[in-house]
Image 1 (cartoon, rainbow, N blue to C red):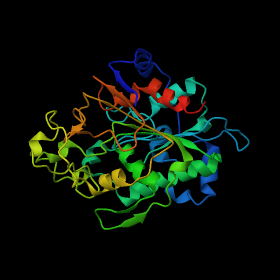
Image 2 (tube, rainbow, N blue to C red):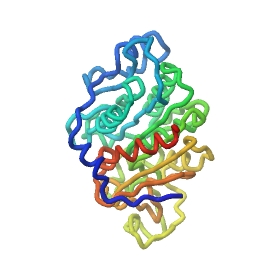
Image 3 (cartoon, rainbow, N blue to C red):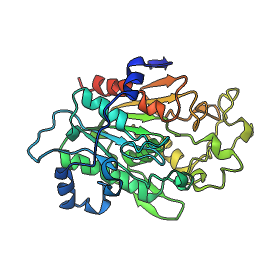
Image 4 (spheres, helix red, strand yellow):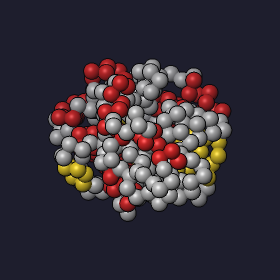
Length: 323
């Protein structure tokens, strides 16, 4: 495995500051197609957010798609495109960069799976509602574009939402609702990129003031489990492998399923992430996941910057597998 240690990618950093923001929502052609389809009930346009609630689609039904479509799955409290808030930058930087490098709106897709209210971040879980919504959006893009393959780029909670979706798991959430997410669709995905995901949980969830919140629950939250070394050692670099096996049920289910997310799989994270801390959870990097092909580790970026400034690396991983 080739491992990248990056302090700063100058081209990406400059671009993330100076770009023309993309404008949504999804095109009229995609909206009309959705209204006539079995996906009409899911409201993928998210028009209550105006031009930032969704993105993608053809300008007309006759438009031809030449590149493998890319689907972007955002994280907790975020959305399709930037709303100008600290944790609401969406995929504006990535989409703008891809457009600058030859992609069309019909080849780039994003929706908003939550309410974008940061004050509700502690309430969000990997429940059946969110899981089903993300699964159906992926299916809708596949059906609408007619493309045999797609690529997926995900960030934060978007990583841990979409991995069970791709694997087609059956999940019982914290409210007792059981949802079967269908057959695995990994054979339809060329490249999967997980950015700043909490695949083994979050150490902030062992804090006494965080543990009671839904987003840290042991079933569908980011509970990192417990270990004999003690909760205060969760993010310690001195713990090499605590063999924790009792962490969040849905995270463990996704990690244990012997199904690779795509033909090519990647991860990236920062060692200065204010949410994931140093990315260590009882001796494991929480942004790694099984059967990973390659990874990029940054030294100074924040949780959102790791998504917004890494656009050149995102595109490189997509392009190298499209040749």
